[in-house]
Length: 315
Ligand SMILES: CCC[C@H](NC(C)=O)C(=O)O
Ligand SMILES: NC(=O)OP(=O)(O)O
Image (cartoon, rainbow, N blue to C red; front, top):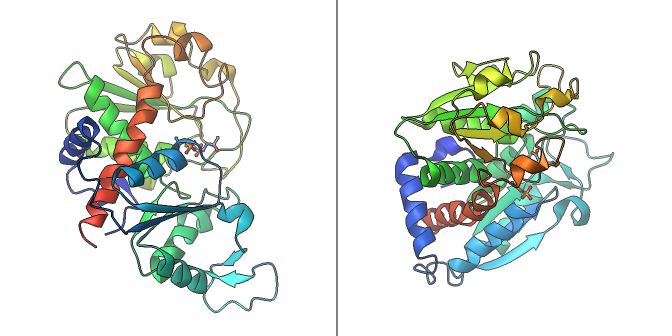
């Protein structure tokens, strides 16, 4: 069993309930991971994913090995049959097979390069590990998806929802750097699995996410209209998908302010973090009692722990 996409989950509602049960007694399965090793490979930076996933493994009694592959590992070649006479020192085939011998589960973070859309959306890096590794793979944010985040997001909304069918908004907000679409993509895919939620995506025209992700999800180009009566406002920047990897809009009118949150139904503010204060969201909003970003980050441990537990039980 791998965990690459939120769509690897057979029943989101059952997984969310299981995660909340784990949260109530996180050391219940402390022996499950005894003498099993989680290897975590980071091609990019992390705070929450690294610490919460390691904490989850510790809660299950696992050994953990972490490597900053991006700065400490060899440059990898992912193309089969490549003549390796330029930058790459090692082929993914050897790297994945060798790492598989050192651990029982491999978790990988490898962000989108935001240069070659085809390469990114082919999930080249994590697909290379999936193809050549001989142990289960967990996605800690790939080019296209961040399923540990979106499972934690689902857990958080379950904990905080106050009505049967809450309105949930995914809102773009400006950012000075080009960021991946992965978090937004996974949030959309998770929302499409929700049975009783009213979901809308809002972003400037031209900032549409991949249609293969959004499918028939509702898109509203007027942010204020999207915020009306919302119960959850999930905010995330992403770089342009159509003009791939570019920052073509940095309009501060999309920054989430108290005035915008006043349009909601006393809505909760959510963000995966890290967040650029007073660019993505005002201090007033993120410091308000309606902001649940810290508990949302806490739930990353239980999201990861449920995934690791399910994989361990199948080893
Ligand atoms: C969890 C978010 C990771 C990353 N954020 C940054 C700042 O690179 C992103 O936007 O995908
Ligand atoms: N939300 C999230 O994945 O945070 P990090 O990038 O700090 O791991």
